[in-house]
Length: 262
Ligand SMILES: NC(=O)c1ccc[n+]([C@@H]2O[C@H](COP(=O)([O-])OP(=O)(O)OC[C@H]3O[C@@H](n4cnc5c(N)ncnc54)[C@H](OP(=O)(O)O)[C@@H]3O)[C@@H](O)[C@H]2O)c1
Image (cartoon, rainbow, N blue to C red):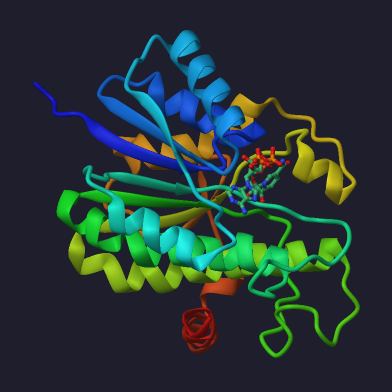
């Protein structure tokens, strides 16, 4: 008999995150926990997922991922195994916003949120290894400026801030993959699909794929035996794809140190 595997998916109330949670919950042997910030949305999503999948091992936890203390607290209180962490939550506000800590919102959520979820959940993943981290990034990536990650000097444009955040997610994947490769924890990153959502609407494009199509690659990376042991790679539509951003190890290390200073 297989023991249950626990998967934690951030942004589980959003278009792609909900579909990732659904695809994983439909597989036998998975307990699914969505991470959300809005309790009403979280409850509705859990009800929906239980109904549609028939899996009753679905629940939620609450945290605002743009805030360091919330992630630290959640990880500190975590008392379950953790076999799969999917970092998927993201935002792209059209105007520059800051968190209560005074950090630009996309940098705080899309980059530091991913970084801190990996950093603070590593002890739990290690205990449950073999384990997997899947980072949902994008092909829409570039223009990272480590001298001005929060657009204090550059003119804020949500598209540019988004692209740099997704470049950073792809680079952080390589940093954590290297760090965790001797611990039987794989870390991979992907483009999901182009799906209509709050986020894609804020970026100004519609999205021609269904949420399930968008969720296919991340859910596959999270569960498939086909990618067992594969780590530090970037995928589009289940295909391992060359990623220039992860290749400059000096820059990858520099970004890791920058994120760790926050
Ligand atoms: N849609 C696309 O075409 C597309 C393409 C490429 C990559 N992606 C990537 O796919 C991922 C999911 O995007 P999506 O299109 O599904 O977006 P979405 O529908 O707007 O969902 C975003 C999710 O992130 C959550 N979230 C945002 N800020 C948070 C915070 N501070 N704390 C906790 N949760 C937070 C949202 O929670 P609430 O429900 O409470 O707002 C929501 O669940 C993102 O990483 C995005 O970059 C999307």
